[in-house]
Image (cartoon, rainbow over all chains, first blue to last red; front, side):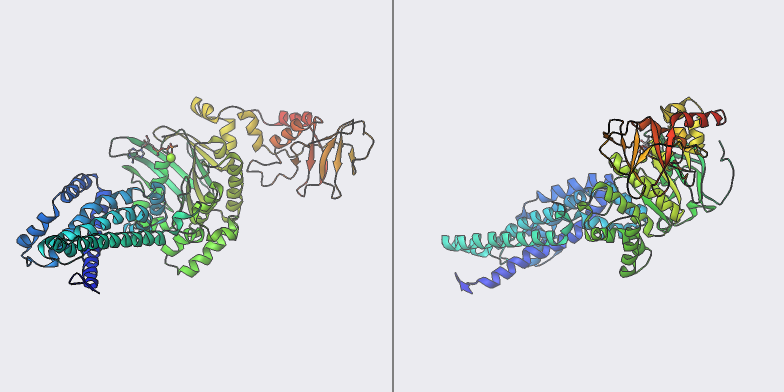
Length: 209
Length: 368
Ligand SMILES: Nc1ncnc2c1ncn2[C@@H]1O[C@H](COP(=O)(O)OP(=O)(O)OP(=O)(O)O)[C@@H](O)[C@H]1O
Ligand SMILES: [Mg+2]
């Protein structure tokens, strides 16, 4: 589909990939860090404020600094992807730790008592029970990621943000509006997806209601 | 106080077990105790006296800082903790069920961890659920859809599903109402009569300890053993003021629950098989077609509740039972006619129980 001089479907695909892949990668990185913070009070005192601080770095600054530090090409989508991954990690380390904290002690104690080893305990009991709190964290990270992707357009990385930046340049409000509405709609769509996924994984959480 | 006699294999043995936690709190000073094979050993004591701590040294959820715990003669410190725990059933207060697994899969947890296929584990779980008296229809529910009492039953089933010879139970029935608690206690006694596990049962309720324990260990703060004895002995001869205080009121009366009534003479009572229109003129037992007592008829013909009924068969005579002096005396005292009704094991009328006869038997008991 072509509009405003752009292939809109390509922009949408780029937007989604650039927003979602970092959320998934960030989750993978945040899981062990969050687990560590959950286990060790010392780790928590370092990791949680540190990740909070990461989130306060302006996104544009990160997008520009990453190629300098890592030597990636200045126009590579990788810079945006990495930035968003860092934000996701920053948001989720705390979420993961809190999601694991929320698993009732009686349940983990019972699991240890019946003979679970640490890995089985984490995968078989703690993580499944952490899903409701974790889903809430992932939804925040996802919404944040979908809106931050558009910043990449400022340094020439295509997404629906491109419609906004070039709409501005061309003083074409409809084009800007299309970019805004499109990226908001995508953010909502994926928010609903995470919500549905979280529910699907936790049929037990609605039992007895 | 050492156990009275060594009989049987000593299954769980605490040897001078001490535990000082990282923060300096002394959980246990030096506990020495042997829980015998096939018996329920009740650990009872005030809050914070180290009951949970001592239980957890058995499956290595707590490592002693001094002394050792032996299971079947082997120091548990030499065992792999997870492997050790697969062989020890554990029932936790509040059941501690896995909220994300259906009842059947909660119970199948241990068999699965032991390496059974999910199918085999589920069929084992279904059998155990039946054994603890849970309706098969509950198997597919989530734990949140069960009552507290049902959850505790599932907790017991989960602990039994691994076929472990040893069970650790930490205040398993303290969160349910008194009626359900008694049901669960009866259920445990029935299961234990079938299974003969070695059970360490923690409770802060002395009545529960006395009801369930073959032996009762009364602990003071710091896990110091105040007395370790069979319940009747504990009621008859509390070792010191602490135990006396802990055992509480009415211990003389409660002790009667452990004395077999044996040769209690029964008196003849007037009986009737139909309510009739005419007042009987004296207290009369109304029987149904199967000779079972249904009610008292007052002299004026009014119907009254039977009160508690005395069952003449003494059962195994070890546990508190109906065939005890307590059961007999209670039947006499709770009857509106001043005389209790005695039945046989099938519930058929056998005769009357007079309080005087019970007291006369009591006088022949050896002096306490
Ligand atoms: N992990 C721990 N760290 C420090 N102190 C602890 C720890 N666990 C238990 N304690 C302390 O050890 C003592 C014994 O605790 P324990 O839990 O064994 O008591 P309990 O007899 O089971 O009490 P309750 O009837 O209240 O369950 C208490 O003073 C308790 O505060
Ligand atoms: Mg306790």
